[in-house]
Image 1 (cartoon, rainbow, N blue to C red):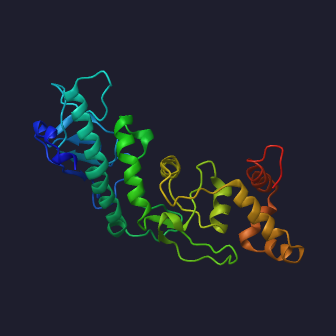
Image 2 (tube, rainbow, N blue to C red):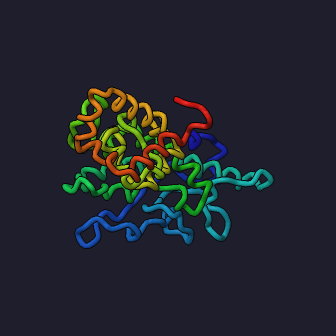
Image 3 (tube, rainbow, N blue to C red):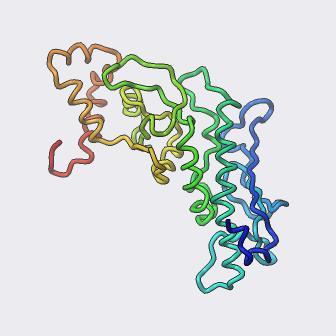
Length: 275
């Protein structure tokens, strides 16, 4: 819609953006740190780097001799600069976010699911994080609509768990509203225990952190109250407690250190009260 406004005609741009990524390096998915992304092109590469794991191309409205891509403009700035920033921000929100989402949606088919159940998907290396981006304005324009797109796709790796059925199911990709996002602080043995008992997504902590920050519709974060209620319900029945504690799923509780860690997490949201 912005492209149809007469005031934008002077910019001589069209609403088009794309992303490009290195998917294979010597026949294998590149490891973290060798993705080779980060360029911004309009359409030729510009000097600045975005910090994204992909290249970002678009009909951006460039600013000055430095050929910058302004995403935000100071209120006291020139009207022409404000118009360029408005155009670029909308191009990122609408076109670039959709193109980036299309790329990420295609990656599971490109890489497949690893046979090793302990290995995370290579595709998560291409998911952007605000903490790694060089421009806060670009992150604010790109990440919310991008993660909103992603939330609606089956892109989240999880072993589905029915709370009354402790038998593991096959690991697969689900929508964001089909599971729980674990805060990065839930790691190690506590993280393994949570994923053994909850439909908690298996993803790198930086991706989980970005999801929690973006909070797209359908996202649910695992809470201490949820774990506390689950443990109380499962172990509160004395008749079933011994049988459960003898099972593999509950074996970590035989470790005093783990039991203390679990207790500390379950009480982490309590402030003088009880639940």
